[in-house]
Image 1: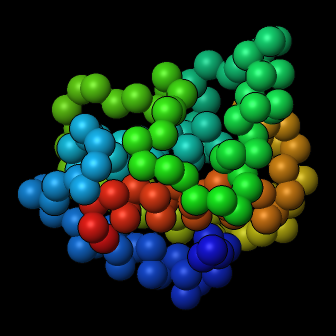
Image 2: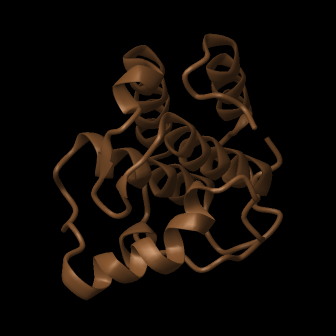
Length: 150
């Protein structure tokens, strides 16, 4: 798995994003390329922005028990996997805006580095290791860039 805290791996993700165009079509799924970029941004919005409701109580417990291992583990996502409601993008998005936001989030994550994330609490999954943070970011990006042939 690529390391989102490594400059070379980050550059590779960005190079793949730069290959996308407004005409890029998915190999599976229903999202447009702009919606996919917005969808990928949600992961970073949870970390850097306070715009999504934080799961509480039973929902947070269920996420930690049943979803955390899928999201932060080493195993790749399956095509057409179910996603959380906050990640469902139904409205039209601006390709260039979402692309630049995603690239900025990727750069910010790399610059903050693995030490910043090691032991940092995820709003959905509790405290994560730097490896779990990397897996979550890297696996999600790779899944959706592959979805669009990048």
